Length: 525
View 1: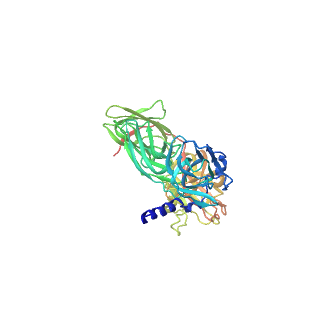
View 2: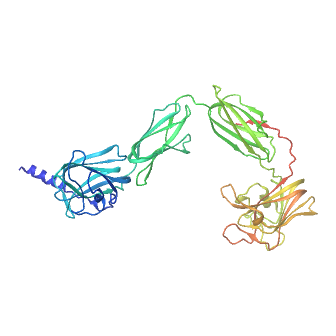
View 3: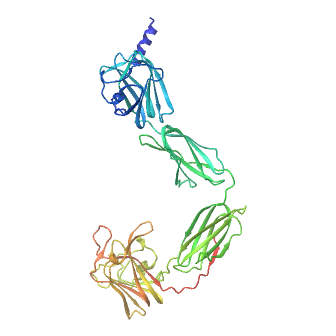
């Protein structure tokens, strides 16, 4: 024998007797169901390795000498160990896997010239390279003896495979449908996040029920000539998640009009602004009214645009208004949009004069009565930290504020907004026409029991407590809020109550006496 032939023989022996390190991991075949043509099938995965514990084939028949391990759920398999009884080993066999019992893949035939030895058994070990399978099939192709005996079959999982998404594309793009195609580095379950807004993919489409490495997802019901965005998402059998890049495609055809957005801004008691955005240039007609069935045409554009800014004035407070926008593109394809909004109340205390002993906390020296510069924080419409006015110590007398409305009004209700960490639990509300004679609306008002908690909408997000007191339509020009000396203070946070009070706003609402809306609608630049 030449030295090259001798070397090859040694290598062949080493390869056939190789015993990988992964054999020390968990055996995921243990106790699993086995089906096939071998006798005593359940012994093949019972965990007992012995010359006297085996499944066997006694009469060899071509292509019929097999057993299948049923794993119960798909697994990535790193390798397999087969424990054959000595003297009853096969000359050749095939190992293959399946995800559905109908299609078998990754088939590989082995013809070992030598087995390793473990627990007095002949052992063959093979890498399966992380193949994903619900079923693993071993078929004996040629027996070494008339009888083939196998004591145990062990499978070892792969837990270090990396899931990635590759080759993402859109195909077969039509007017109303398209296909999204992508691959994953290992078989996985996948779907796509989908939508018309790149930053708001709010639909999950094509959630698969099985694992694949090539994924094809059909999206239907689309609009013509429209840009759509999608992002592939995959999850492997070990629970790892991978997300592909956000990609887009545009359907064929000329798009129909579509409202991209409607924004209503600066809604007050007497008006609001409206911003409209369309996907293609459109002309619009705006109708508005207090009754949905009786809208009045108040604006018509002179050309076609993709966006409009509309100012609506002449409304009345605390009223629900309905609107309808009729839009059409160059081809006269119509699009109607209908909705409603409600105007706010008319706070007649806004920016009115205030007197009293409260002051703005940034000015720690301001504490005298009639300090208007600091007290204006109570009628500036600002609930945030820089709009807070603060009392002196509640042990002191004279903790009060007085609002001057400028003229006598029929007052429906007064709303007091306290900071949620320093509110009064014992104060009174009075009304006067001349600041000489005062009418008590209510005393012993407790902001904790009589109010409700809210959160300011600005950058600070302050905890606030609002108290709304009905005034039963009393007439008056002046509003006085008085804190009882040594009154109890409250906090909605788990902090000790403070010895002073913090008030954000006092709002006053009169009995409505408004005329019918005098709609004034114009486009603004």
